Image 1: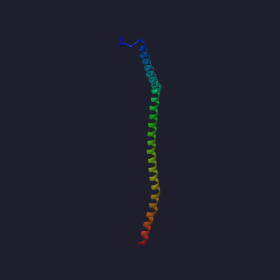
Image 2: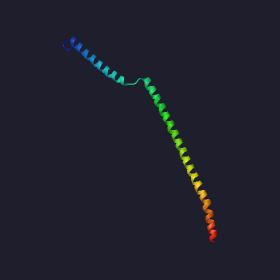
Image 3: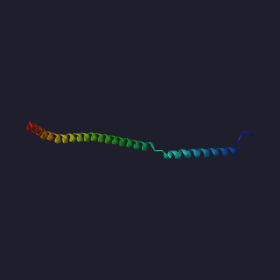
Image 4: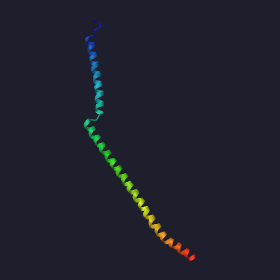
Length: 104
């Protein structure tokens, strides 16, 4: 019977075990308090996906606008070149022909 613990020792062991379990549950509860519920997570995830989708659409729209702006700039440059060079050729070419004709 010397190997068996006394009732006092059993009581202390049970109290220590209860304290350990209480501490462990306290740690678990503290960690659970920092976690987000599934409902909140689902709503936040859906909101984030919608924001990403909206941003993707905005980037695509900006890229399309950039292409249109580049085409507009190219067309403007062509128009400017044509509006300056064509009249110059129309004025300079007859002058050259007249000067060559007058010199001959």
